[in-house]
Length: 374
Image 1 (cartoon, rainbow, N blue to C red):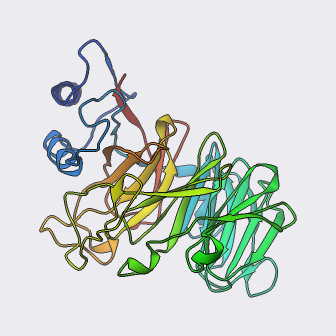
Image 2 (image 1 turned 135 degrees about the vertical axis):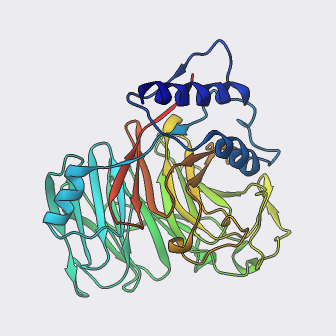
Image 3 (image 1 turned 90 degrees about the vertical axis):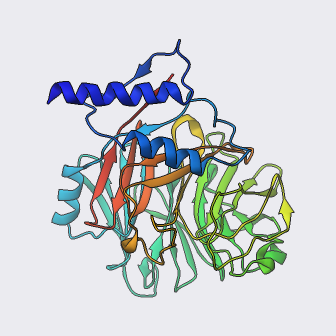
């Protein structure tokens, strides 16, 4: 068994060298690495997904990621079950995990080893209550909670204490900024700006960004996902029904739109001719996660067609055995694509050298190691 395991690793690393790894750079494998997506899939699928001319890292494996099989985070999943917390979506920062429970309308913070820090929220419509689908983003400055039915965006500290609560029509997501500030994202009122920055008292300090593409799309962009750059002044966000990503510069109060030329398109939509930034904007369901991954780059989880070429309306009908993730730099340029060896991922994140994913199949949170050529 050990012999075949080593042979498998050797063959995969050989494939890596074939597709562009510098022969002077020694590949580094993760400990106890035993199984990955097969070599043909890595070569064929990544080649197809990266057929765009603007893939900056297409011809080099210097920073290409190869992700190993995931395993359930046992202590964390046991703690979720023991506390009857149901994972709809989740956010991770360092060793902190925040789970957004849309069924019980509450939010819970755990450590990765399963220690419960606090539970916040309850069903209802008043302060500290939620009634709709709740989602949010966690970072070093706090976590946001968005309630779709109440048009509410809350900002909590890492201690679970509420610091800011906003009721603003059209706000779709948000993220905590330094100094108690809150960045809210909306596309419903482009005249006021799709990005609004609030101070620690809830007052507006900036509003900017015209989503001029909003009324030219077959469907309204719905910005569910966002991430903060390490320099704390750039926010990337995306709609789950469109291929473009948006990058807001808090300092200069500007928003730019970027996309790449996917080698496939949903048959129900036509290409939109308008261009902004560096690429044309195309419509394509669906984006499921946006997060900052290895090397500090923007990672965007995308859905590719089924094996028969058909697009699915729900991930439960997805028949691929992997999930594709595009990477962009903070200038909006597409870098490359890598594969997570798990289909039907409902929420994906990264922290301290591991990817974390929630599976639609069993609602557990999995941890994935990776290796690459240096």
